[in-house]
Amino acid sequence: FSYRKKYLPTQLVRYHTPPRFSLEVTEKIREGACEAFRCLGLRDFARLDGWVISGPESQASREVVFSDVNIVSGMEQTSFMFQQAALVGLSHSAVLNYLVSSACLRHNISHGPVSQSPSESQLPSGSLAASESAPSLPRRKVHVLFGGGTSERQVSLMSGTNVWLKLRGCLDLDVVPYLLAPHSESDIVQAGGVGGLLVWKLPYDGVLRHTVEEVMDFCEMEETPQREKIIHSVRAEVVKALGATSKMCNNRRERDWLDKTRPTVCTLAEFASGAALSDATVFIAVHGGVGEDGRLQEILAESGAGYTGCAKASARVCMDKSATGEALRGLAHLGIHTAPKLVHNVTELGRMLEDGEAHAIWAQMTSHLQHSSFAPSSPLLAVCVKPVSDGCSTGVARLLCSSDLLVYIRAVTSGTGTLSRNSLSSPHSPIELPSPVPERLLFEPFIESADVQVVQDGIGGEALQRLGDSQWVEVTVGVLGEMGSMRALSPSVTIKESGVVLTLEEKFQGGTGINLTPPPSDMVSDMALLAAKERFEFVANVLKIQGFSRIDAFLHIATGELVVIEVNTVPGLTPSTVLFHQALAEVPSMSPRVFLKTVVNLQNRKKKIL
Image 1 (tube, rainbow, N blue to C red):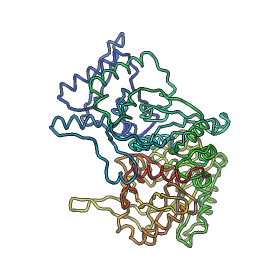
Image 2: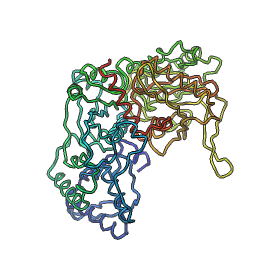
Image 3: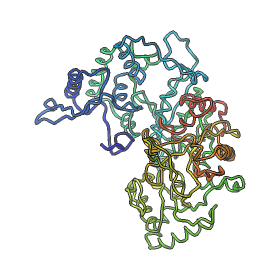
Image 4: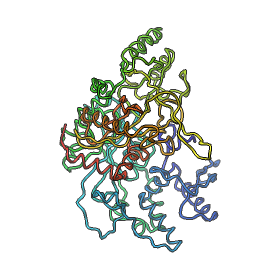
């Protein structure tokens, strides 16, 4: 296992819970793990890794060998521990409550319900662990929709799972997860339009998968007698042994959930109509594709369902980076710039390159971008290429010459999914390529921003060092509010660990990348930061953004001027997303749950707006 395969969703790895063994072999694994736990004197919890070695005759003769004992198991939201616990009827809070209770009991510490933090009590977001005697609150319905068919679907799964789990802590909300099934544009045509796409209503254990494909396997899998026998056997034993129904559940909703359910399916049109009939808010966490180009917003609005984020028109403009640039043209006198852009049809460009026109195309491209540049005195040293309508750093690369252009186009059109490390003339990490192959690509000048690095300060500590002469730093900022009065949060500078483009890990995986929120005053002056925030708010209002969005831009460290890169109307909401950092930096501070609840509340004041 590489670090990436273990902790980021990838189709190179497939997990099976429960394992595809007989009940006898599964019991052998469990018995061996319990014996190892006792022999090693372990307490509370652990994760054991090992192998099942095939015997010569039957599964029953297989040998179980344990190779690694993790006394502090990984506890990310979809970790093995939570996934396996969910399968036998235990939620995240049930598992964690048991661990805390067990430790407190061992040390004679009284353990009451987890209290609500002061910041979370500012909104009616509910207690994390209310007692059964708490009065029943009228609960608004929230349907969290994630998945889809773009290269961003795995990040969408991470975002949707996080939103669902966070909002479940609000006792005044009834939050249900839904998966928009993977699809292509041809699937949309065959389905008779976007409304014909399939949506799956998921049970608790159905969400906790590492990839959208694994969730779909769960949805479409037929329950076999052997699988049911394994799950029922393990579930009954665990619940009885741990006293799950009386000790591990914080409130009645947790106990009710212990009843196992199966996923159900409907069309997107039926999902939208159902949300409207039940007065549910649809929290859109579908990144890219129909989730971000206005089509999903249109079908929800037509059905009368409320939804989070931007309306159809602004979503459509912001999804298209070229259209976004056009909408912001003419704002240079306000210190708001957009880099010049050149759009090429992928198929046509690939044909011309293969016909030996690479040098001529590169010369024309660089000439056009240079003479249209917002900074014409700067020599054009590199070109940035990206899909017109993709995000999450998908397909973003720096090209230095015609051979780079040829290598990149061949990789995109081949459908391989990844451009291997250092395939281009300058060093770079593996580049995730869009899937399916995009119709259009966008080319613009590559803006050389300051290289910010963490260095040793000579006295045993660390310090930030800005290298090079560039006065531009790349920032990202969340905007929140009503249309026409959007408010910018504190911008963040993300320090790249390697290469010139942020990787998927640095954007969405905890423990990678360094986010500075807000940027240190010795990097960006307070006056420049304030001016930049005002410009971000102006951009959001010009684009008619509402609810929340994230804007990426280059910021001039002395003047606060901006070069807008793109606007994400359905930004990533994974546990490590920078939006939560920015919300926490607000005064008063907003916890992730309060931030998400604010997004839901904003929707309710603008329902049925197209």
